[in-house]
Amino acid sequence: MTEDITSIVLKQSPTELYKILKFEGLVASGGEAKLVIADGQVTVNGSTETRKRKKIISGDIITFDNHTLHITS
Image (cartoon, rainbow, N blue to C red; front, side, top):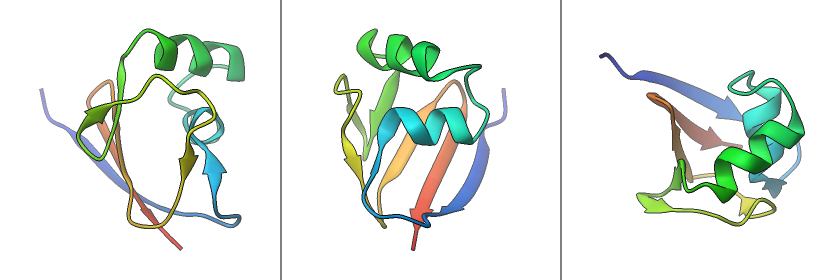
């Protein structure tokens, strides 16, 4: 499997983790985003993140389902 790496520019910083997954189309809805985060399927900066409303800022790296998002401002 190849990993998909995408650079994301935040218009508003900080932004909640579940919103980024939803807006980037990695999940179908905010509810699904919250479920995959709570289930421990998402990492932020290499650590499993289970807080749905974790504040994401420039420099953070999010990984989910073979997708890596590099956050910039």
